[in-house]
Image 1 (cartoon, rainbow, N blue to C red):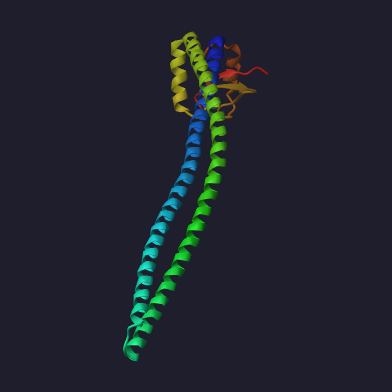
Image 2: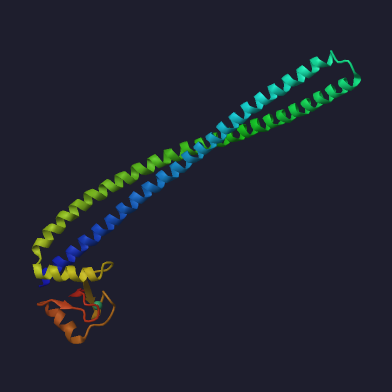
Length: 236
Ligand SMILES: [Zn+2]
């Protein structure tokens, strides 16, 4: 029985290690996703800013055509000025010219504002692209490290799987069945636990003296009466 329990403890050790590696691999996968999401965030920002610039460019072209029309109108009114007959007509044309001029300078202001905003946006894009470049470089390195670590993890895992198979074959099927059942009830914890100084290390409760004494014989399978786990004597 001692030998069998020893195999069970070994099996449990292998399964625990495999579980740890699996959770590391899962973590690595999530980390890769997070890194990609970080890069995507930058790409999205650049795209948004570029579409803002496109909008501004279109707006600027519209202002340009407005300005041309307004200037044209002003020139035409100026030309009319030369052939007016009455002072009243003259004054009215002057007023029209003034209005056109005011409109024009308003458009010009808007054009300048538009250019300023384009400038600012270009700066943001350049900055974002710069940060993106730096980030993508460090992401690349980090990904490489994660991939290498994951590869090592997978190699280790397949070795552990083989070890597990080998050991499982050496354990009495009935005992293995009991072990798996107890393990199912303790998915986070252990199914086989050591006892030291009459204390069960699965639940930290003292064993009855008789059971503890029987453990020393090591000739039959024993369970902790409190947590129902398989117990074995841990020699100090
Ligand atoms: Zn216990």
